[in-house]
Length: 500
Image 1 (cartoon, one colour):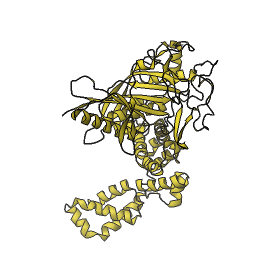
Image 2 (spheres, one colour; image 1 turned 30 degrees about the vertical axis):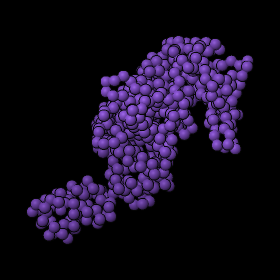
Image 3 (cartoon, one colour; image 1 turned 90 degrees about the vertical axis):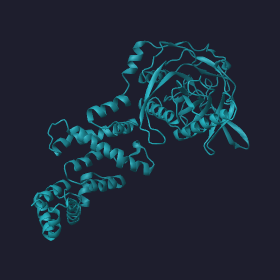
Image 4 (cartoon, one colour; image 1 turned 120 degrees about the vertical axis):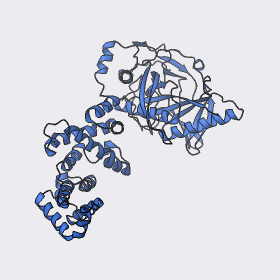
């Protein structure tokens, strides 16, 4: 039987302010339990919340980055429910009048299996609203009791709610990754999933084609893209099996256990009316004039999609390369700095003068190395681009030595490994290790003459039509030169000499 999968995401992004959304208490991660639980966050008698301007500006940034409507007037409400880590019995959030309205995010989807090709998917964003975080329950370390840490209470969140536009785990993961990249790119969230700065709730339902939406179950607090994919796949199959076996899916909140790969129901799912929303009497409506929006717009960096388009259209990179190079702002900045370093010298190095093809050459060379050698070494060391021991300028200077023929690609890899492990400049390493290519035409011609004289039988075979022997001559020539002969020059000389 054919089933359609329907997925929507609610993503909680912790905003990168130094203080909480309604008070001056610190948001720093890792403090001793309850040392940052101030009176305002706990709503002790006599205190009043004061809205954090920085949190509002970060919400505006997100709205602008996703082409969303920024509400000129939004309202904070009290969301009432009891939970041990919410001692005041309500959460200050936004309900019917959020600060950010409808927007969209277009993502590249890489199918998780099969031979399907990558494709674009636009996911509509329903809303993004400001709210405060709750505390945290700590289980297992208190002689069988649960401890409560309220440091996180009052931390500013932007909850980003999508439409149910995704129909596979691959699409949900692609959207979550793109959102993760975007909030880090524009500087509103550090994206640290291990510390809970970026948490996803996934609503999953199934239906037969053409039928109304099925009953959804919400998978809570996923902080790993891998776990998200596993949780969705399990939940989809569970719902299908339940219905096909005559059962009925009940609306519920579920948790994913990564050890078993299974979801389990935690509680029945509440609807909005269960929370008894009403406007918070201690907070005035939030009014955002157009002048404020335009000031924030002026602080936005070039966004990932615009940068990708520029890399493709102006630098001649493939769409795949452009997407990899814009996976994070750190990678994009590293790429552009290395290109600028190389491009400033590469025109004369490859005899292009002011020709427009110099920059695409530099861009492709840098892209190949960053996507290849740099990324591979970072993965082996368990580091990200911000921890790269080689600077973009160092890489660009090394690649210049490939462009001007000083070293071969294999020689460059040795320079790269040494630079990574020990530091130093490319020129110093090339000199110390004797990696300069032989580019003297006279020396290469003399070498080729010796090889031809010593292999007269092979030369005769080549000239009789055995073209594949060319590789034989290249091999022994490179061996004779100890790998230092300039490959392009060597090939040219060999072709001329072998042609007789």
